[in-house]
Every structure is written in C-alpha cells, then in structure tokens.
Amino acid sequence: MAVTDLYNIKKEKVGEVELNDDLFAVAIKPYILHDVVKMQLANRRAGTACTKTRVEVRGSSAKPFRQKGTGRARAGNRRSPLWRGGGVTFGPKPRSYAYSLPKKVRKQGLKMAISARFAEDNIVVLDDFKLDEIKTKAFVAAMKTLEVGNALIVVPHDDDTLHKSARNVYGFKVIPSIGLNVYDILHHKHLIILQASIGQLEERLLS
Image (cartoon, rainbow, N blue to C red; front, side):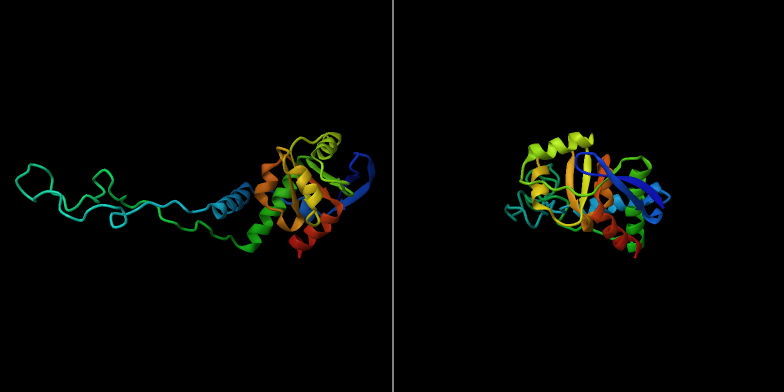
C-alpha cells in the first residue's frame, strides 16, 4: 500500500495515511476515461432543441398559385420547407442523449481518474475541513495556506457551510464522496480528500 501525508487545514502534518493500491495505483487507460467522460457529458445534455415541421408552422394550406402557366415551380402551400417561413425538414426534436456504460467500466474509470491525480502528486489528504461560519474569505484563506489554486474537495457527506463558502470561488467545487465522478476529477487540477471519505470510496469502488 502507498503511504501519503495527512494534513490539517493549516497544512501541518498530523500523521500518515495508507492508500489502497487498488484505488490509488491503478493502471491508467485513456480510452476508458474518454468513454466515461463522453457518457457523462451526453447524459447532461438537455435535448430540448426543437423545430417545427410543415404541419406545425402557421400558414394557409391553400395553393398559392395555379399549377401551370406561371413559369414558376409548382407549389402546394406556403408552409413548404422551400419557402421562407415554412417548416424545417429533418430538424431536431426533443430527445434524450443519455446512455449507459457497464457498471464495471464506470467504476474502473473512476479508479483510474483518482490514480492519475495521485500519480501526479496532486492529491491532498486532510484530517478535517470545518468552517465556523459561511464565509468565502475563510475558504480562500484555507486554500492559499494549502497552496492549491484549483481543486475538487471530496467530503464524506454534504457540508452546507463549506459548500456555500466555496460556491462563489472560481476553480473549486465541494462534492460528497457518493457523487465523485470522472469528469469533475479531470476538470480540476488537484483532489483534496477528507480522511473519512477514503473509507467510503473504498467501500463504493472496491466492493
């Protein structure tokens, strides 16, 4: 097992933590990370783009002019896609872009993303991260002390005080361990994990 330093919020070393190699030292396969991120982004798409066909646009159904003798191309009504203000041919309609990868692949991708940050030495393990009140200034000061400018902070459970203190600071996001995902890990340079979250991640990904 790998061993890393355990810090407090003042960046004082308070101990060491053993990290499971099956979670923090997994061989990285970029194509799996790509597949998982692609799935996540597809599942986030709203899919609300919508156009009107010729039967949905407003307009007369009367024939605009006689069939022959005008020198113009024949026309059935003003709602034709060929006419200005007419319907759209094969335009988008509301749909779901969501799809799913096998659970085993999703788990493997998450382990690889965590391992990638550990291999880069961009993981910081904290014993705790408590703020007395909702205060952005206090959160920013803590991040400066830890010398981290862009990070995903993994907490064992929802912490409303920490979340609200960090939500207006660009480059930082607080997320409970149950919601940890590949996209958020790769989107942030550093990964700050509270000690209590490590056991939860091992239970989630190694069981």
